[in-house]
Amino acid sequence: MAEMWIEAIGLFAGLLGIIAWVPQIHEVWVSKRHDGISLPTFSIVMVALALWLVYGILVKSIAMIVANVLTLIVIFTVIAGVVRLRRDESV
Image (cartoon, rainbow, N blue to C red; front, side, top):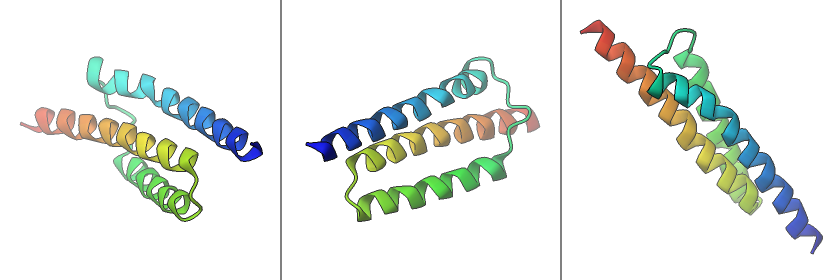
C-alpha cells in the first residue's frame, strides 16, 4: 500500500514537470519564437531524461518510466519546433 502512494507522488511530480514545459511549447509552436533556446542544453536534458528512464526501468518504477517518457516527448517537441523555425529562417 505504501509503495502505491510513493508511485502516486512520483506520477504527480512527473505531471507537474510536464506541465512546466507547456509555456515553452506554446512559445515555439504557437508564437513561433525560439530566441534564447539552446539546442545543446535541450539535447543534454534529453540525454539526462533518457538515463533517468533507464534507471526507472531498472528499478521498475512506473512513475519514473511514465514521467520520463512523457517529458522526453515534450522536450523533443520543443527541439523539433526550434529546428523547424531555424531551418525556415535560413531559407
